[in-house]
Image (cartoon, rainbow, N blue to C red; front, side, top):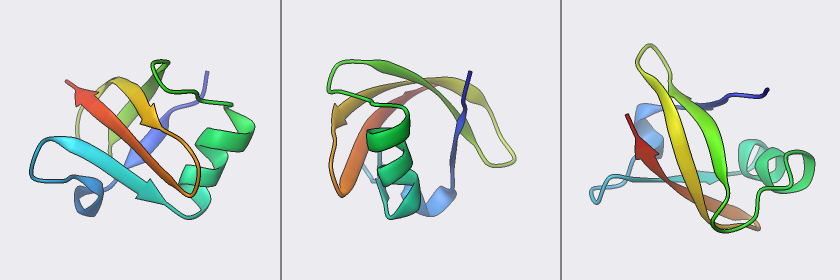
Length: 66
């Protein structure tokens, strides 16, 4: 199972994560993440948890649940 690596700069003040570029494209096209689906996520150098997809496309956001 894939693990999306999240960088500190991906985190927004409300606790969600916004990914753009290759990682967002990978989540959307390769993992076929759809809003409401859960994905394994990990903070680079930190915890691993579950994220819930909120949107897909060129921008991909998910709630990080430690």
